[in-house]
Length: 261
Image (cartoon, rainbow, N blue to C red; front, side, top):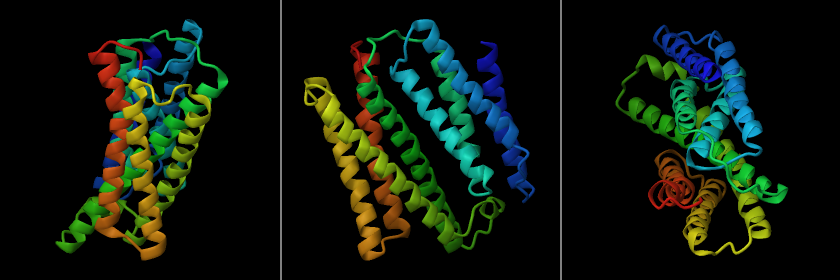
């Protein structure tokens, strides 16, 4: 409990420091130590739980917490380089919330997965974390464009990179996430037995639809120069499909029907 509480507090401290920096129009790196330690402790919580139970689990709350950890780690790494630290205002409280949910509902002992299925699961979680960051960047891009069109020059706008740089970062993040999602689908095809079983078919179909949407967006960017509102709509629609594919199906199976996810 002590490690969990410290991690949650540090996440919130990092977010508070970022908010203060945005309000003062000067985002320093004072948030970085708190965020980095919080990310490490978040990972330690999972490692200790897995060690005690004899293996990793991917149940609903554990998966949520791991995606939150991945998002926080990516935000810390990118923010340490001086780009998009403002993402932490949303990501760090979200990571704290997912960690709290995992701690409250505890570790669920599941059937041990071999290395191939573990590879597939870790690829999926990393893909979700990366594309979730892309979805947040898309929202920020939309807010920035909307504010500029209305000539609303608010303080938080100065915490974001220029519009073109933000858009470039969005598509680079989507490209990385798309590659990871492709690897997730390929490892699932190769390693998961009976991929089209009843409780996996909707997850598979929605994941493929999301993959097609992200791929279509990258193709549209390369071939037709898609940007702005078009990029935002495609990104959010594709991310919605991905959330339904993984967390939607796990929620229904594990928390509603009480079946293994």
